Image (cartoon, rainbow, N blue to C red; front, side, top):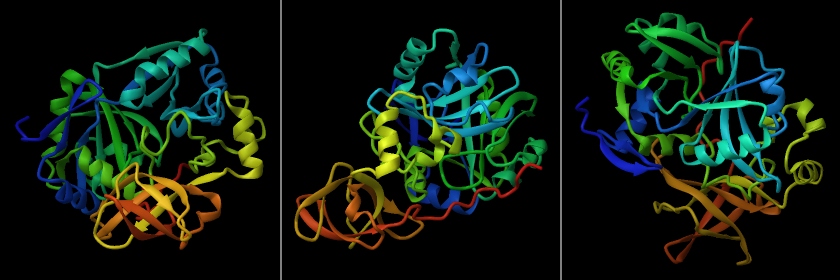
Length: 354
């Protein structure tokens, strides 16, 4: 399609970073619905006897209790209690389906295969993945795939769009209602054109996707979480579930259990710098006494709030919302305060299954 998107290289892919412009695309997503091409994400099918049970030995989430047709956000841990990757896991009738971060696909699969030789992992790079996001996302599907509107949050289904078989998960990375739609790559243009034909839908690039996810307080692997970051200090222990917290049984469990019991030394927090300057990833954070207490991991301008926002890690004693701090902004210190996450409350679909 001749949408005139600006393409940039990433993890071996050419990806659209913007079309009309990041601010306009961000605001359109919050007000209506945007279509993102996220085909670079790793789509992996996992099969084998008791696949969910085997995956639980590496992923501290309650996957065996996950009903067929449901999706869960989770993390994979390493031997040091850090995060190998964050991912979406879907329990299907005959297998388990995972969506991995593009830059982590090869490393993730090597880790999973080395630890779980009884399972078969099939990477599906030939499949496309489109993310339809925004408060009008459901309305945009009312003609193309009306049955998808019955999906509850984090539910999975299979429906046709313009005669193309597609997988649907009612999930996304923006804090808005939306759907992640998978299909054969050769048919992706047909699906995209059907959705973009709706007046509610415009294309959006990865620039808006990044500012939207930051407003929603969502982590970006490689920035906000990595192999040295534990799920507890990242504020992701909620992904475990009560049963798994009682018996994690995953790599790095000793560190994770200690931090669950005693609290981590640092925590991921939101940051609101004063002024109009955007504080970027890697900037130092100081307390009011001038002692370095943390680091910024993501920073951007918030189109929804009209101010700069950031996320980062600070010593736990400085993690309370409202705490005064100082951030490095291109060599000078600017005042900031710790803010509760998310910056913009999520507006996901509220329907729940019976």
